Amino acid sequence: MTKQEFKEELRKRLSGLPKRELEERLSFYSDMIDDRIEEGLSEDDAIKDLGGTDKVAAEIIRDIPLSKIAAERIKPKNKLGALEITLIALGSPLWITLAAAALVIVISIYAVIWSVLASLWAVFASLAACGPAGLIAGLIFIFSGNALSGVFTLGAGILCAGLAILFFFLCILATKGIIWLSREIMVGIKNLFIKKENA
Amino acid sequence: MDIQLKRGLLDVCVLAAIKKEDSYGYKIIKDMSPYIKMSESTLYTILKRLEIAGLLTVRATLHEGRVRKYYHITRAGLGRIQDFKEEWREVMSIYKFVTREDSGK
Image 1 (cartoon, each protein chain N blue to C red):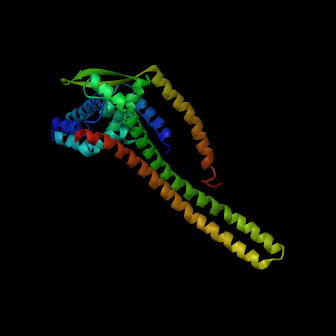
Image 2: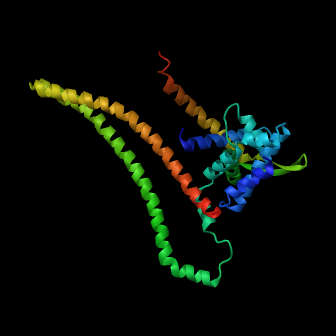
Image 3: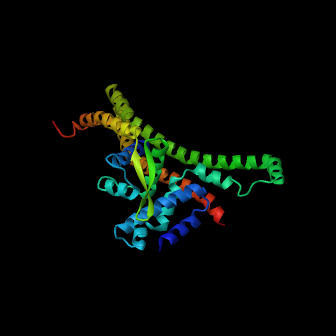
């Protein structure tokens, strides 16, 4: 692959990004390729060294904020005529509601995901609290002469403590997974904006 | 690592890479690579941020028949490195205290 092909491919894939931003980034990559060539790499190897188009395109999408991508999508390609402005104004009760609904859906997806996480941690916290509580209550029972209840409560406390330890690792795993998931969703949303442009 | 903390650290890394002399993208990445691996895209984002913040300036120079962008640290950029050093003296002393018990008596 030549440098020119590399840039063309990225332009095609990232056509939904703001033009100026994209060209600046491409010229940065172009310099990077030239500097590698100067060091003795072939054009093809220099591009491979950068990670190829797939990796570079993904990196660029990750690094450009969603607000910029969305603004570029919304920006009209040509100057708006009087008719279009009137239509947009007349349609505003409709599209503003639709846009607001879309936003609310995205926010609620996030809220659902994070509340699952919050409840997992809450279960962990209550198990962790039951451990020592069971121990103390059990000892109080035993010393006040109620040995049977005491031993039972003591056992329950130890069980809770054990479960809490297990749950702790489960929660950590879930937290990591969900952070990863949120990031993927964000990339997905950005891709949605860019893909539409290509279609 | 905390994202905010990492971002600040990477900023200082890039500033340190152009502290002695003006440098260009590929050289910055190569100079940092024994210590920290950074992708081109990340470097671009950081350079842009530092430029907007006034911590470095960009100048295009003709090199081997093409234009190459050189990055030059400003006085404010040098100040950021100085701040970093002072802050981290404190952090290192906290680190010493925290790990003191790990190493035994």
